[in-house]
Amino acid sequence: MEYYEILGVSKNASPEQIKKAYRKLALKYHPDRNNGDKASEERFKEISEAYAVLSDPEKKNQYDTYGSTGFHQRYSQEDIFRNFDINDILRQFGFSGGSRQNHFFHSNMGGGGNPFASYFSQGAQQGQGCGSGGGCHQQAKGQDMTYQLTVTLDDVMTGADKSISLRTNGSLQNVTVKIPQGIEAGKKLRLKGKGGPAPDGGIPGDLYLKVEIAPHERFTREGDDLVMTAKVPFSRACFGTQIEVVSLEGKRFKVKVPPGTSCDAKLRVKGHGLPRGLMGERGDIYVRICIDIPTHLNEEQEKLVRTLEAAGL
Image (cartoon, rainbow, N blue to C red; front, top):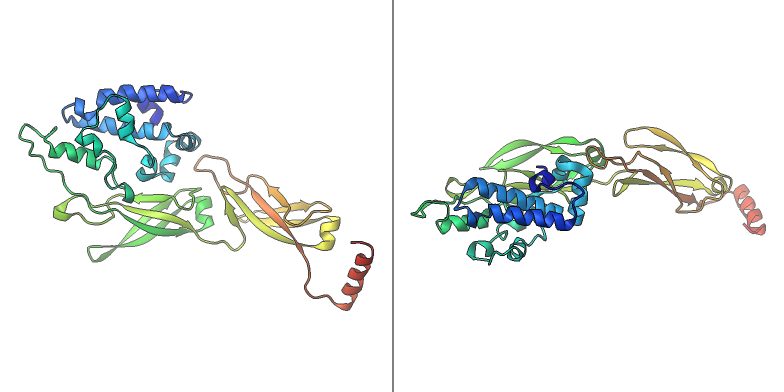
């Protein structure tokens, strides 16, 4: 879904131009003005989703950085519409806030469900777009569910396909989940129709997999950067040395430790951290220097340290 094309604006459009474009389209495709026309309803959903992203500076930046595919791998429908008050926006555009509008976006948002479900089901109950008899029936949707999915830094680096087992109607079902490159902890992956069953043969809910990153033996993650700690003896910190850094892919680098390097200094290996989405640049590796102070000294070492102490070191 290309949001700029949906609203008919350029990527350099100002916030006011984006708002003006949305207002024009919202007035044209609002369901209350189209007698329940399904094509207009779908169009209205699309332009509202586009505006929810492009009117939010952080979401817009993510969309511009990663593109449509990368953005949707990071943002679920719940993420897209979080903190987006459609009722307030539509009131600004001249809609008075009838019973349908007052229920807009208030259904299933806690579980990441369809934010338009309540809005259009309200219309169905009132007979709008259901024929003169008002007898259309809105099928109930099953409960959305959220599970935790643990992935490794290697999965984040390359992307991966994970097989998970789901229990559906008392039986186990194996499902493959695609882990996108660069995914962050806390993001949710959506499996449509894999949530709770619906009563009376309705639409099943969705399953959301909340991502957690497993600890790594060498690296910790800071955004798209990888940070590791290297112990350097005091003498080598004084005179300078080289240490070897091995990336997640197994590439080896010689990193120069300058003379006089202090504890907690950071040395950088540029461009060998985690990917920033499918097409983005990679972060860096940072080596945090720790001066290795021995806890036990032999007799010769103690004499040398005493000499250094006497010399003011």
